[in-house]
Image (cartoon, rainbow, N blue to C red; front, side, top):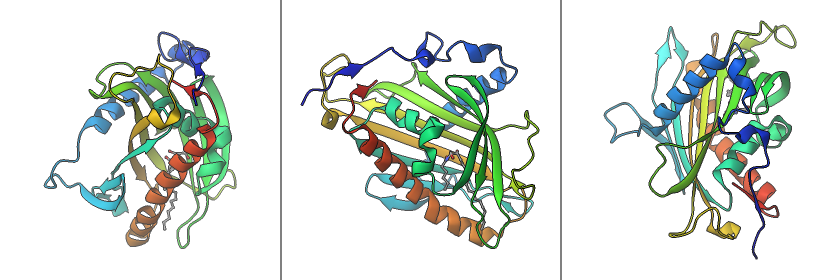
Length: 262
Ligand code: 6CM
């Protein structure tokens, strides 16, 4: 079946990819810089071992690597994950990761998510409370989240690229919801590219089975205060593959009966 294409009807995709509005915000220089840095970092490979990346999950298209790092006894292992799924575009994947109304459907560690500020249609500030994981204290996170289209440096086989970057900020001095959370500091990028069969472009009439979305997800979480290292590593080993499977499965399911969105 042929799908109607949807294009250029969203205020977040003007020529700046920012909705324009975010550019005058005090956080903008940081948002722009961190997005560029994270994209560069996402594009760096994991090498052939030797540079510290070790694979810890290898299931079908999913490959997850970590580097074991501790700062003053706190586990801060950087994570880099790859996945490839059929049936969705890069923009669709990023849309469901960015928009808060869907987050509870796929984010299993979430207790509460509040939007503190809408800087622009593609840039929000969030306060998120995560579920407590025994024996550690409950955690929360205050971060900006920004979605943008990337137009340069795409892989040879890609027709487009979208990213969402999340980064902790202290710009809004917001207390924890219940006054007893330890604040974590996170830097996350979800970078997605759409691949099409040879010779096809996003202007063609396409069916969803012709779409492939190539995903790179990178995350560094500073637990913000003491948490037992082995327990934390066990939580990550369990939760990150679960997240990536559940999130991508959710997006495929949400999109399957909808027009393709480039
Ligand atoms: O990137 C992910 N989600 C985004 C939207 O929610 C956002 C949030 C990242 C938070 C990641 C940290 C969660 C872990 C908190 C619990 C730590 C408690 C320590 C317990 C020790 C025993 O970027 C997906 C995040 C997937 C996380 C598995």
